[in-house]
Length: 239
Image (tube, rainbow, N blue to C red; front, side):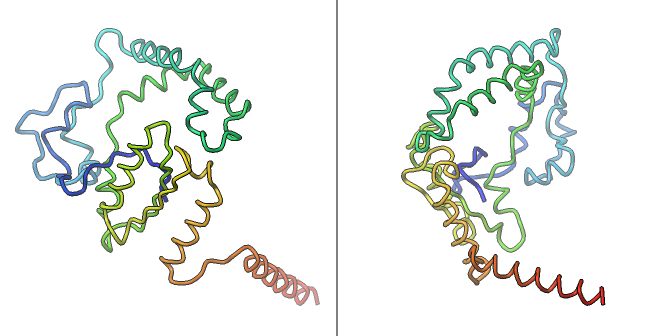
């Protein structure tokens, strides 16, 4: 189940998949020569299993190395730190209880950790994620069963971007990818409208397994029966 996932998602109708022509920009070391390029690779999954042979290898930033990554990370932290409270208000604009002082303090505390700058800087050296076009379809039985819950009132990426993304998911793999767009939920629908997201999950699971999911009352009844059966077995053994 995905909630406003930030993964790469491209237009399904025009998605071309893995391309040997665009795999070199993420490493900074020597690039493979034309003879070394593996043209047989057809998917990002296959490339990962082969060790991404068509990508330039990782190497430190020339001359300045790790210090450059730390400097970049510190710059990002100094830029965002004063905005933490404001950014949380955008993330949880439909349920401001989640943007309380404890959450703000926890983020501020993490940002001031000695290693946080390096973590942020090192993230810029990571290769891109596999596109969701491939992750959610390249699987047995026609693709994974997926529920995507989208908050359309997303003030982080914008409501327009959230609407566009919901439409892309709807076209991705109909019948396997189910989209539930919640109009009055924001960037984190599971925090903004947990009861609606829970209802969506139960309905989705019912449709997958062709049988109703256990409600709270049924679950307690089953657990009670199992406990009684266990106690009966223990009593019998004691005799």
